[in-house]
Every structure is written in C-alpha cells, then in structure tokens.
Image (cartoon, rainbow, N blue to C red; front, side):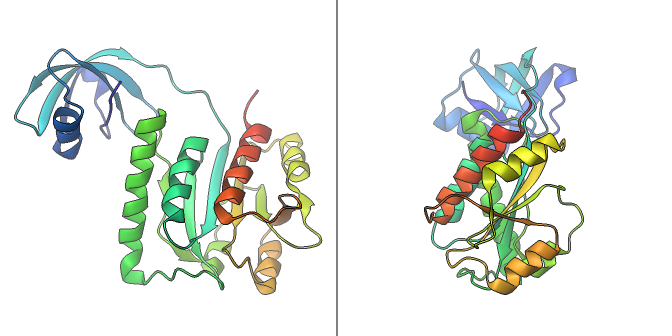
Length: 247
C-alpha cells in the first residue's frame, strides 16, 4: 500500500488533505484513484489507513481516515554519529540506518575525513540526507522520522551534553573492549539508548581516541576483521538493536 507523509496530520478530524510533491507522486507515479486506499503517517509516530475521496488536478487529494494504525513497538534509541564517508556511501548508510531503526544521525568531520563540508553547504547536505530518510521511512513502514543534523566538527560534537549515557566508540585500538561485552553491560545497567561513534576510512587519530575517552566514549572493537565504514555501521546498529531492544 502506498504511504504518504503528512506532518502534523489532523487525524482526529477524519479528513486529510495532501498536496504538493506528495500528492503528485501518489496521483501521477503511483496512480492512485478515487476509492483507493493508502497509509498516511505524520513522522511523529502516528499513522492511519485512509481512502482517497477527491482530487484537484495532480497536486491535491482529499482523504477520509478509515482506521488508525496501532503504534509501532518500542525499540532502542540509537544515535549514529558518523564521520562522513566518501562517495555515495553516506546516502546508503543513511538509508539502511533508518531501516535498522536509528533515531538520530549526526554527520561529523574528523581529522581524517576526506569529505570536507563548507559551512555554506551544510544545510543543503543535511536536507539531501533528510529526503533519503523520508524515502526510507515510506519504504520500510517507519512512522517516526529520524533526526538528521547538519555536519559538525568532532571537537564540537564531543562537547555536547544531549547524548545518551551509553557511549560506544567503534575503535581499532589494542585496549578496545568487545562490542558484545559493552552492550550487554549497558543493558544490565538499565540503558535502552546508546550512541554509536564511527570514524572515517582512515580511522580516528590517536588524539581523537584520547578525546573520545575523555568525553566518556568506550573504545569498542567489532572483531578481528577490518570492516569498511558502511559494514561497521550496519554491524554496530544491528548489535545494539539486538542487545538493547525491549523483550
């Protein structure tokens, strides 16, 4: 069933109006017709099945709410803080991270980050990744839009106070603790939210590792195999979901 995004959707009114790009895509690409059903979600966790009852050209459609859908099961709150990888890997990572259930993505610029984002480009980059988030939510049935922040420096990021207490820095250092051990200890301590900090293709610098530990990040290994950035991301998120999700 086609899914439409309607922020602040007035579900209680029983009638919804979808316009602009969302309506054009539904009517012209998906070819919805009067009498067809679709899902509407508001990006804040609510969704409903609705019936298309009227259209105005290809840019406005009126829907009647037929059934509110139950809320999705609660999952671990996972924040992904990631040094921006080169090429199109960031788009892939954002898409798959949404499918795996992250709640927030923080793009970082570290010492060895190849991609350098100028201040004037930061907002455009973030908007592009937010569009990827929306498309992923439509595809995989996620009703709460994960937050994508604008790129920021590693040092700026480490000064933040709005970060989960369970802080995992995926690390290639001799004293790194196994990911499984760190996550299981976190769950035992009652943590259900965490942040996963993952570096660039060239890894964090020694100074950045020291700064991360000083800010409370636990150096954590992903096993004996050196992983590509995108593989490390997917492995870490999956492990965190498995360890921290509610029973």
